[in-house]
Length: 267
Image (tube, rainbow, N blue to C red; front, side):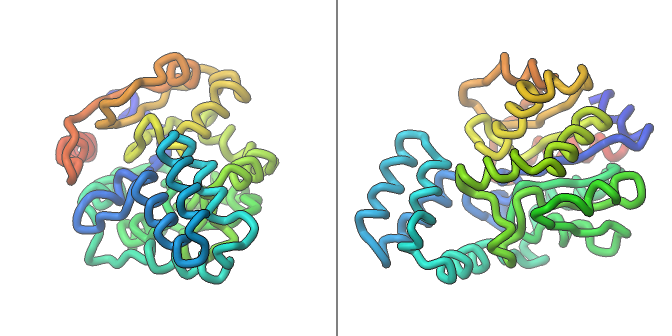
């Protein structure tokens, strides 16, 4: 974690927050598997066969494919999908998990999240940090050296058109030149501290693959991922993207991760 302190000292730390952080109480939002089950249950009200297909793809580990089926052909109407995401991810300040409070207190240059909820916004309330969610990504680049910001990389629940949750969405942002430039700055000019991700999380894997394969490891800059995932470790991929893995014991509240972040904040 000394590398993280060095990044704080030279104002180059970017904190990247994934869905696992919002699964902690009292918020208790769903992770990918539970979200897809909720999508299937919602789709069942419009087309039972579609719900079955979503579950089949999810059980096969094709998470993005399952999400694609939820939205395809507008069988679940867009207005209903938008309401589904707004209702599920409209988190309140009183339900803010402790991990967000500590992450927001670390003096990062910027904060980013692939989550759709309001938790980072609530955690950073009162700080002079701009909350941004823009599908074009262009305005973010002009802010990079000018102002601290919190960027919702995959959109926010209140704006359905900004959301990134299915395969075609991921391809859309990867083809966006401003997004590619943003990721370059994250991994070439900064150190990324990632938390709340599992090694099956398409949000995290999509970004790591882009760094490893398209950016050729981002020039050797070191990054850190804090994880409690006991599953199979994509070691070669993480090494190619220059990620160091720091494991902690799993529990619902991420207590050991919170303590690691608290110690980092106090040093």
